[in-house]
Amino acid sequence: MTTHTGAGGASSRLTRFILLALVTGGACGLYVHAALPAEAARFAAGVQLLPLAFLRLIKMIISPLVFATLTVGIGRMGDVATVGRVGGKALAWFMFASLMSLSLGLLLVGWLEPGKAVQLELPTAAASGVERGALSLKGFLEHTIPTSVVDAMARNEILQLVVFSVFFGTAMAALGERTRQLADVLDALGHVMLKVTSYVMLAAPLAVFGALASAVAKDGLAVLGAYGVFMLEFYASLGVLWLVLLGLGVAMLGPRVLRLVRRLREPLLLAFSTASSEAAYPKTLEELERFGASPRIASFVLPLGYSFNLDGSMMYCTFAVMFIAQVYGIELAFGEQVAMLAVLMLTSKGIAGVPRASLVVIAATLAQFNIPEAGLLLLLGIDHFLDMGRSATNVIGNSLATVLVSHWEGELKHDHAL
Image (tube, rainbow, N blue to C red; front, side, top):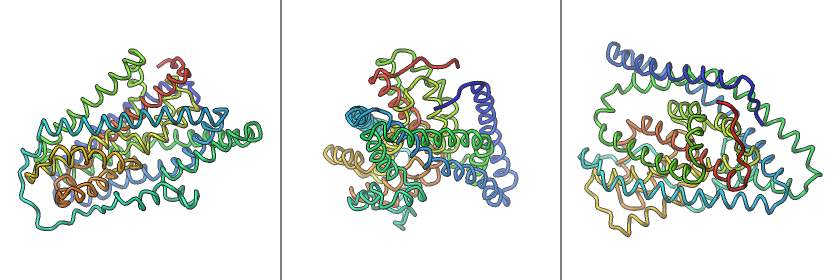
């Protein structure tokens, strides 16, 4: 669905501007925090408008882009049996990757025990400011099945939109040639939204500058020092997860996977710096097609992954729950830890790829296992910095899933010149 002429140079320039914004934003925020503390709050509120505007522009694109690309991807697969086969392979990988991410997080947090380094008293107030209730089956169904596709688009309920698009695309595939003109119209809509994305991406460096400057101006680097052990060990654990995921990719695809990572440098930087994997979705889709993934499979698997395969967020769920338990000296038996894995396998599905979505699931899990929900207060101050790493991990996990399914379907082509 994408055009490639001249894209490499523009992408490289934008990457450099994002890196520059990352550095200057942090430096500017640190200067305001240290030299102008009285103005820090007002400065942070002002520059926070930059990422707010950018993320709203990205969200403006997401719904029509997901609907157009997903329905065309499914509709052009040829028949319902192909849709089921591709979807089955994708979901099988998602379940495997989810279980691996959760289990790896549980093993590493149990070994590293970061909570032992932050022994704090239990807060008197139990209010964390994060709503819970993610474990309700009724709530899960309401979050999954739309009553109106227009309402789902209006609220950017990606999982609901995926459900509708799967039905719509499957019906298109079943009707075959009669829906060819409709598929062409939706394909054109997808091209238009990707062009809109290229315009919106021009504002990405400003959003990165604002996000980092705001976070550092408010909290400085002290908040990082106070929880330095936890952050260091969590990022080290994410590094292990990356090695495992990429190792599996190399085992199945060979060293070509390393070129995939190079392809994704801009979406990864964008997800990391804005702490939102959703912000990187349009660019990720574009780069996957340039890498050689089948457009129809990428348009099908990637949106599904944003609802069912957020590897970084899932590792964070187990890491955060066990960290809070360790801080308060609460020991979870092996059976309870296995039960927690099972609970998180279900409740983590449908997490939106937006900042702080994981906290809702964590809040529900804490209550389920009698761990004080107030423990979330320990993480709220550094959650933005943690979200940066897990958002980038979500992008690499979903990209690998898309490429692997294309490979298994025999539709992975050679990538265009970098």
